Length: 359
Image (tube, rainbow, N blue to C red; front, side, top):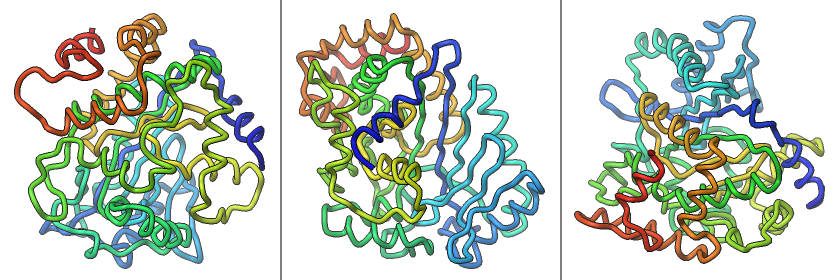
């Protein structure tokens, strides 16, 4: 595998605007009657097993060393994050209504099993009642290796793996130039989206007053693979530049899948910027939020990024050529203060920015 392989894979995702679709990934915490985390053993693994039975012949069960770790259904993939966070990955879907329908099916399969065991799903950016030391990793070798690596590279690796949950939206691009434009605007707006949909009232069992805590936590996990994409505001930035950055990121864990294509997909998933490229552009800064809010988020993303005129008008409005990665970090710092009154981001009034993205 080389940089050319990564680039070819990403650009194989080029899609005509008439065929644009969405993807939504929503992570949940499984909790018991007291609101405490349900563990993997005799808990979340049981939930997956019962859900597979309820889904019937249409389901593909994902296992590692005999442990059930996920399910694949039509346009719905269920997977587990390191601390047993229960992720529903929906799509690709043409409309927000289709996403909603598939999520309703997910709930229909899940609800009887949850009720029978006295469990529930919660959507927050960070667990309400646990700290990292309270949560065991699921039995997946890649996560054990990630845990060892990230415990040495930054401050919040253990929190991210065990106690955080996110909402991610994926969008298509029509060309390499369009991919870069979307990557740039999404980088600019990532702290704004994180602020609008902030949902992290508690961190490590204590009240949290930073609305961007989970989003900024990534900045302190591993500066070589997370945060704002290096060079994204360079005028000649390209998909190849992105691939070179990914390719040169230190190895964190091995790929256990084996094939060359699996290796490409795996490598692209081992960086954690605010916005990530695969065969689509993935917006990653928002906390886990209830499905109603998640659908609002998808709608907003579609209105901003699938209107080409609005996309470029916003890039011009923010004067992207004059920006650097430091400006995005600065915007996140301003929003973290959650101050009353007029907040200034990128030299613009926050309320004016909201008017621009919602108009």
